[in-house]
Length: 247
Image (tube, rainbow, N blue to C red):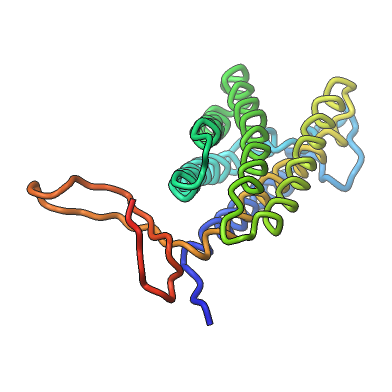
């Protein structure tokens, strides 16, 4: 029986904890009567705002939790992007795809820090720039990774992982287009629901990296001055065989 790498749980736990954190922000805002619940009708004349994620995390105490969730998610998301880049590096025939994917996710994660640290009421322009980076570049990352998954076909699981990723990429793109279209028509409740769905689909996409991560382990090698400097390495053999090819 093959052993499962502990790195399998990183994408899964990242998605679950980030989603849970965002829903905590939502329920705090609802409890404080800052936003209208997603299952209610929005009244423009009322005191409550539409339940957009940014508005839910706009005022304390929800804003404190929101900043922490976004910063942690950006950091762990960046780590997942680096691990995925190293995993694909020796297998991808077109390196620019792998590099471009890493750059897109890195900038999307930076956008997440802007969203979390610059609340809508404090700096709307910078906050919206971060939102555009997160959604736009995050969607681009999903499509590029879906294509790479089928082309590289790690462990002959290209179709097993690629098809769900294409479906999730389509769902992310559809929700994003729907979100902006509904925003333009000032249908705020439906736009907010589309935004929440977009984020959940995006987190679901990142969780699918557990499929390939279960076959790999990543190591940090530290040595003294007489040996090569600190490097991040990966073993490409199955865990049960204890044979590694170090990057």
